[in-house]
Image (cartoon, rainbow, N blue to C red; front, side):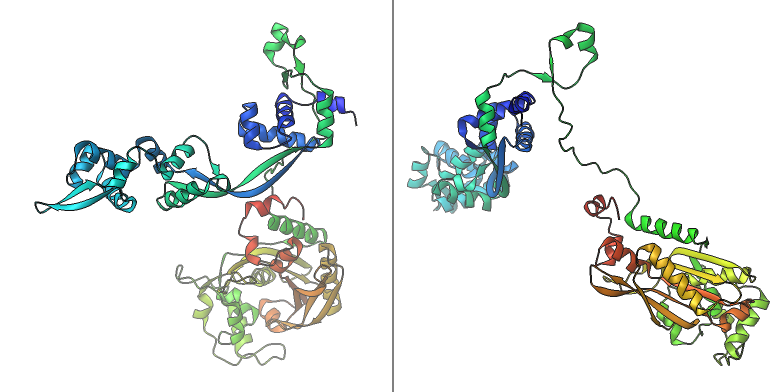
Length: 511
């Protein structure tokens, strides 16, 4: 290492701190501030620069520091209320408390404070005279007139400095500190006390000696015009020194995962569709062959709306076919066997499942091929905890083509999960109200060492397809997006996706 080049590259502030530390060998930052006449920020910047160059070491320990409050500062300048009361009592003689307080120039509140402390310190007492309570000075009060007690001494010290380490106070002032803290005149906070120590390299640098020459870091217009640039010395820049972290604007981590998933599905030939924020119970439930009086409908815990009071129904022909599927069944099914109520179908709800969007799309395009997906927020009346939210993203897709089978569906699912970054996948039977057969996919999480449920899928039932005019097999799948995002971002609480903790977001430059 070229020590001379290292020394020549030091700033003036760094040299001042290094020279001051040479005198102390080891010192607090406050000692260096006094010795160099630099402010705290300048000393700390210089110290950090020297530490990066291994010329000094910085250590720190949390210590309690006492500091004066605004009220304490006022009392330090004017005198404690009991001191002012005592001096007025000595000057004007015994009188009622109100009169003495007026002589002392105290407010009513200050007078009340002073009376309590006069009695507590034993400086004054009350006697009865002509049916009046008269304040009289005591022997201790007379002695106190010529001396300052510990609490007053400590206030005087604190008004001159930013703070004093509690451990450095003598025992009498420590006792006074407790009293002043109780009165709200002094605060005690734990602060980091920085200590600087020269390293062997620092001693070597000092042994070489150096000039205290002011260097400039910027070539200005004035320097060029006057020619002063020929006389000044320019500071050498260390291009290897770490810079301050920069946190530019960026896309939210959850949105980046959504964009990544959208790109994957578009690459696989899917077309994106959008869902409605508010949906009718017809498309949200009835068209999916979920009975109006069946508990299966309750698993979605949908949120009803009071305004509008009714939603639009589809064409009478489509409504009639859905009613027939519910009441009597289609394609060999016996239906649910109850009396269908169109008024229930009119009820508006917050969309609780993106399947409503895909089925609505299918009904408008009954001929293959169809290959679409939807990434939208859905809404349910769930109890909010670390795994559940009332509002969350859901990802769903469908594929319609002649001759599709369950094997095709599993192939699509595996390909999607591999592209997401989950190559180890397993499938198991599942249940969903409007698909049969149904399956669920688990992906292996190597860091957790366990299988996690990430996706559900199935073949749409004929009772759903026939009423909306579909005669071909339809594969349907849905990704538990919240679980996927939590796995990718390494979080355990789904609420963290929406907390917008800035410190957490700053550290999420990549996924």
